[in-house]
Amino acid sequence: MNHRRLILTSLLFAAGAAMALNAGDSPRVVEEKYASGALKIRYPVDEAGERHGLCTEFYEDGKTLRTSLYEHGVLSGRLEEFDPGGWTRLKKIYTNGRLESLSRYDAMKTLLHHVSFTSSAVLYHPPGARFPVNAHPRSVEEIRKRLALLESAAGKATPFDPGRERYLAAHSLVPPHKAGALEPDYLKDALRYTQTYRYLAEVPSELLLDKGLCDFAQHGAAIIRILNTLTHDPPRPADMEEAFHQKAFEGAHSGNVGLGYKNLREAIDGWMDDSDDRNIVCVGHRVWLLAPRLKKIGFGEVDGAQTVWVRDESGSPKRSDIIYYPAPGYFPAEYFGPEVAWSLSFDPTRFPETLGNEAKAEMWLLDAEYDLATPLPFNHTSYHPATWGAGLTLIFRPELPKDFKLAGQKFLVKVAGAQSVARTADRKTGVTKATRTDVPIAYIVEFFDPAGGGK
Image 1 (cartoon, helix red, strand yellow):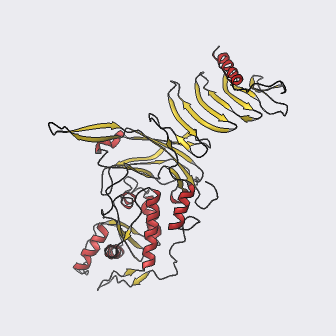
Image 2: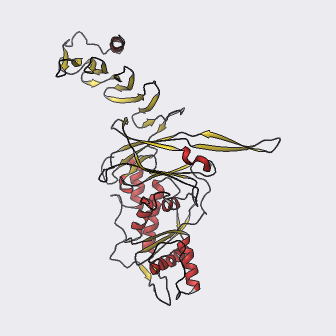
Image 3: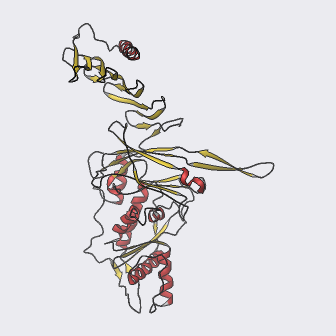
């Protein structure tokens, strides 16, 4: 009886929308059947043989699977999909073949996922939010244009020409030790590359290359090369001058260190990846490179040892509540990878340390119409307490094949359990009161090929 009502309702809807067959249309109805003989699909067609009117699909046991409305072969009107239990699990609205909205429900009729579409935007409706948000805060064209300024029109520019001499002044790894210095163009190339990553993460990207910090970083790279080990607290070799060691210690202690990379760009890629077994628990190198108040920066490199000084807070104190990597919206696939961890770093002034294990992430792969397609399990989740440059960081990595192509793929991320804290002082007593508010987090990331003609 319920399915008869559903079909009747859809027929009435079709009539009201002037979708019923007109007198001049063919009244022929097409039926397809399962191998068992059970009715699989029924739909009327027009004189050209195109679907026109109410199309009904059935499960093999006779229950309604899906109803949809067509106008001369084009979806136009409501599409509803039903669970075998009879409840509506999906609703779509089309106008002349263009999807206008999509809503997915669970068995309790709870709205799980809702997306609507305008001629120029995809609007995502986060659960519990009063208003939708633009799923793509920045357009592909805008991102490509900015990448073209920092890189090249084809995505990542060719790194600093390896045939060119990258050292302005020679270094010495034996007494008397000398840190040497890097060519200005090589340093500027590393600066632009770091700015690119910061732009993509939506943190201030106007960095200043500081000569003094580059000198510290260069000393840090020298001692990393001499010791041939990664450390932020390098001991002084017996034959090293105290003054040189002090500078080298500061250079290694105040930023990221690397060993074995071919150049600074490769080191920056490694620090932003940060997804090896040792670093994925905190993605600390990434967090430091994306520190919102970072303004002055310095780079160093000596024979395959690299450093970057990031312990600077001379930038604006204003920051986003959350620093996402990858950031919501369109994101160039070349700056990420299927085995790279995702991270959210929370503003420590708004989100308390007790966020911890209360925050849980979920992730889905979306289909071409932004519908939930595949829930993704994680092969890693961790929480790292506040560190320099960031508050608590939530880290997770979906299980994806190593050869998975990100370009063109869409992902939905939801994080439940996060709470912000607002502190207000009582006017009479002066006592500060903390008010906690649940902050549901949900966003879409859509990867695109920065070198391609489309997304």
